[in-house]
Length: 340
Image 1 (tube, one colour):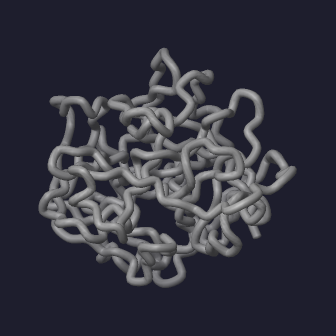
Image 2 (cartoon, helix red, strand yellow):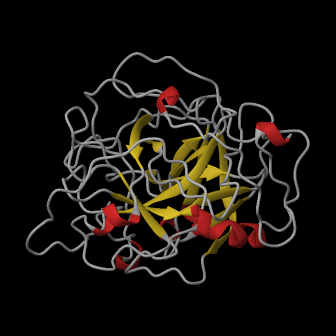
C-alpha cells in the first residue's frame, strides 16, 4: 500500500478513563427547531487562534506519483482547467487565510445562518457531508463561493442554490458512517477563472497516515466561542488506525470509512488545534508534489474541540472514489496539473 507518511507522530501514552462516548458537535439553527436530531450539525473550526500561522507550505508533500485508479471507466477529464491550485496569500494575524488560496470552498447557509461547508468538484457539483443535507429543505439552503468574510457578501462572491442532492444511500445519522453527499448547483460555475475545483484522491489504495493535512473553515475559534467571520486554517496530522483506536472514543466507533486527524496528546504549541463547531462537510487537504491540494477527508464528527484523547473524525474519501464517479453524471473533472 502506498503511503504519504514522512514523519512519526505522537504516540498514545494513556487512554481516557471512564465513560468516553462520542457526542456530535451540534450547532442549533433557530433554537434547534430546524435541526433534526438525526442530522446533528458537526462543524469544522479552527480552535487555536494564538499559534503561529500555519502556511500551506507546511503541508506534507507526496513523494511519489500515484496511479489514477477509478474502479470503472476512466473519468471524463476537462481540457480547460486544473484542480487543486489556489493563489498564495500573505495575511498577517493568527491563522487567517483567504478563499483565493482555497477557491473551491463553499459556505452553506440556511435562512441566513451559516451552518456547513463544501468543496466544488466539478462545474456543477459540490462535495459535502451527508449530515449537512439530510432532513433539510434544500430550497432554503444558499451556497456562497469566493466570499472571504461571512459578515457580508462581497461583490466577487458567487451565489448558487441547490438543484438536487445525492446523499450516500448507506449514510447512518447516528454513527455518521458514510457521511458524504453531492450537491448539484442550480447553475454551473466557471472553474478556469477565480473558482477552481478541488482535487480528489488519485487512488483508492493510498494511505495518508502521517501526512500533515490542512483544514479550512469559518467555524468557532474555541468550544465556547462564536463562529468566525474570517476564513481560517489549521494543520493537523493524519493518525493511523491504531492511534485512532487508542483515542477516547468507544470501541469500534471509528469505522473503516473514517479516519482521525489531530492530536491525542497535545504537544507544546498545538493545544486546541482541532475540529469544532462551524464547518461540517468542509475539506481536509494534503498537498501533492506538483503543488495541488487533494481533499482527502470531509469534516464529520468528534467530541468537544481540541480535547485531549479526542481527535477530529473525517470521512475517508479514498473509500468513495467509485461512488463519486458513478454519481457525477459523466460531468468532466478538472485534472491535477501534472495530468493536464
